[in-house]
Structures are given as C-alpha cells and as structure tokens.
Amino acid sequence: MIVTIDRLGRIVVPKKIRDRLHILPGTDLELELDADSIRIRPAVNEPSLIHKQGVLVHHGSELTTLDVAEFVDRDRRNRADQIVAEEPLE
Figure 1 (tube, one colour):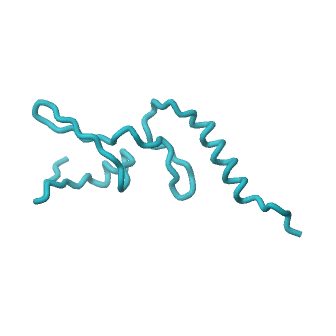
Figure 2 (tube, one colour):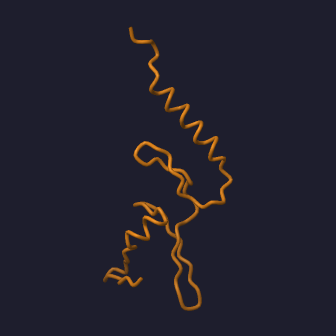
C-alpha cells in the first residue's frame, strides 16, 4: 500500500489498516528505524480491552498478562451494580 507524506511530514494510515489494528484517535504509535525502512506499529502501552458501544472488546495482542475473563466478570458485576435500583419499585 502506498501513502504520501504531506507538506508537514504527516501520513494518513488507511482506514482498512486502522480497523485491522484497532488504531483509534489518540493511539500511540511506535516508530522503528531499520537500515533502509521505517516500521510503524501501535505502542504496547494500551489496555487490551476497550469499551466500544458499551461493550468490552479485546483489541490487544494475544499475549497478555491480564486475566481477561476476570476483567470482564468484574466489569459485568460493576455494571449490574449500577443498574440495580437501591430500593425495589412497587
């Protein structure tokens, strides 16, 4: 895929690639210079789970130290606690 650098030195990462790599506005990218090329990849300092339309979505690498099942269960419990009324409706 070919992209063009604008006069300010910026490039646009095509939507197809942003979607595949889950790159959102504000995502930090890591630049690595090889002998004759530049490698650009998402920085690994982002959480692997994000809220998307109110639902947790995993978008990180497959290798993670996070217990995803526990994280999701905790989020579900917190959400349930927020929507349960303190006093039952009559």
